[in-house]
Image 1 (cartoon, helix red, strand yellow):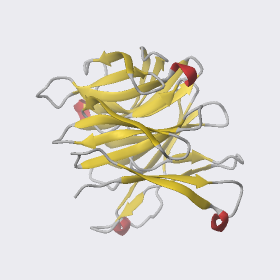
Image 2 (cartoon, rainbow, N blue to C red):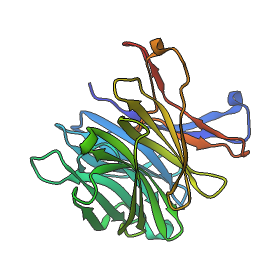
Image 3 (tube, helix red, strand yellow):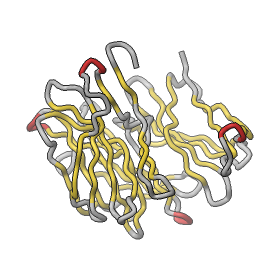
Length: 278
């Protein structure tokens, strides 16, 4: 069954929830696609929206982009490079367009991925791109944030020596030229999936992942980083002490980490799993 995501425009002024109202809604979907996943949206300087994600097609994930006017009228839909994994992000470069961070197959038959950065025009047309082989970095970006003349990227990286994944922090310029790579060793043997990252009030970064020690349940895992990605501190956030509650996941595709505007802290969302229940 084909799945669609609805693009919703909400009037979110400083009003109670009951006073918020839906101004328009628009179904998104590409013909011939089994599943369309529009995971993110960018607000354009002209008041419109750029919505992007992937479509699933036989185990491959073509990048998809949809541009809308402020009233929800479709301007353009298009597909781009075939990605190896659903993890990707798009960061605004203002009048210079966008920079996409994603992964592409290293070969037509392999399952190894190459890190890929692609410049896009404001209308979504592609410009120059940079591909980096798995020998340099094997992993996938999950969040890209502009930081002056740099772009900071939270990623998961494959730790083949320990049969798991680790969290990584990458720095590029706005053209996607890769600079420093920082990898963070897991606190114990296990695997970590990077999910989201926000800037802290101190000028650094707070990253959230879900992490599972070998043979254990999954729990939220928070890492505070300096402005350049140096690890400051980390902690596991176990919501329920009883192991009968099962996994507590923050999903890298659907969930978010948000810094509260009043400076009192952060909010993250996820799912709790016990057996077949979520």
